Image 1 (spheres, one colour):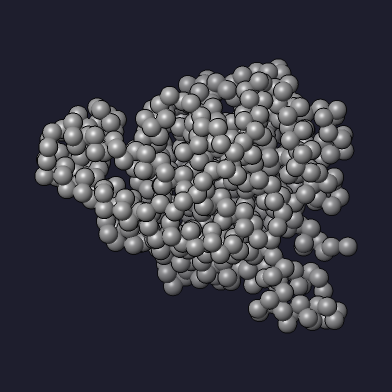
Image 2 (cartoon, one colour):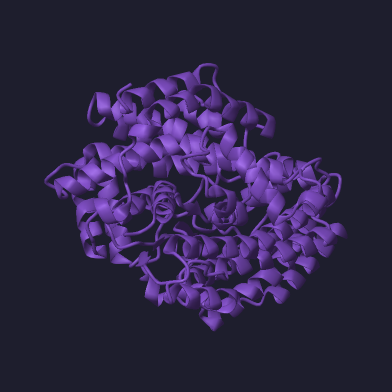
Length: 583
């Protein structure tokens, strides 16, 4: 029998198997204005809306010559700075680059997907390293072009005819991305790749290097399984913790170079959030006041949702069959998106140690195709994970990935989980499995508010630690404090060292807040659907008609729902959660 410690870690990993949306827009990090420009050019380039019909296996990868693209950008920038030729000729030179940008983005996305599927593949590792080095250079060159256009006598016409109203305003006083920032962005990308390739759950790690001696002792019966398991995670804590520390240092320097007082401020701007870090702190403070007491009431009675006791084995085909049956009852738009996914093989489910230990949905612009990658465990929890990702897929399929605001993206995924769990019936899946998934969903819903608040509290403070305290030991102590803040000391004590395995801390700083804000909206869809079948689904698609000119709060309110930052929103959430838990 496995130890209690190991079982508890697996329970938390199941509850928190929240996925990443990897938009992969041109570079790992770009300015908010730059991201809007990139989204705009895809709209222009694919204005007809006609989708290329290519299966994933037939999508051709060819390494783009980014150095040549950077030089071409520099030449166009110089011509605009010198006001060479007519306005129309300058505009045409910029427009002629659209296809090249789409190709670079698409090749990056394809290479990253293949690297994530097998991080041990030397070819795709090399391609990822190439983009790590070159994409920040391209982003810097693109920034120079924005400045030249913003300072041109034709600036207003450039906005009217190409960039969009107000998009050049931030560049009128000069560059936003300096050479120093480009260098820091390259360092950040390299660290992200190092983390992605770090296979911290594999047998290779457990049996190699520093742990082989410990394994040998365990095999002779000198060390208990519990102690060995803990030793593995503590070793991982040191290794991936080192990567995180370097990321924090690089990102803090990046924010300072960009003129921000803190990295949190810098990250929130680049995530296009319409709320500040201070508002986020106030929000999780309300969660501590209203939802933590609820958790303390139910903590001792929460059923065990560990996989070995609760879930049946399941195949990829069975996942798709069950999802298709439920989606068909819910809305034909889900079926249309699922048919597209199946027809063009836009889904990968794997279990190997070589795979990146996170699930994500990306978008391949050249083929106008979302793509799902899932790191599975082989049981029916993979079904719920697929449903989460398929929410992202549906959003990207219907909207051509137009909206890149994480708080909205995560409504699409968490909202579909809520709707699916209410519409799935005993005939779709074995009753015991459905009951287990409903319990997993119930606990997951509660834990989104608690554990993601722990994550955010920890992350926000990690970025302001003095460098002499920015050590693995210092971060472990900070993690303990975060648990205590939200009453999670007994439930998840191993976060003290498992914080270093959370992919969101690495791939996108401050991402975790979007899970909380979006779930606050997605839970309203749950209430609507529970009250009257179909109402939540209808509201879901009303929400997905995103208005790209609106912010997160504005889009939520446009659909007639309540912003999580409104006065009594958290108290209403707590009321819904109390109903879910029968208290």
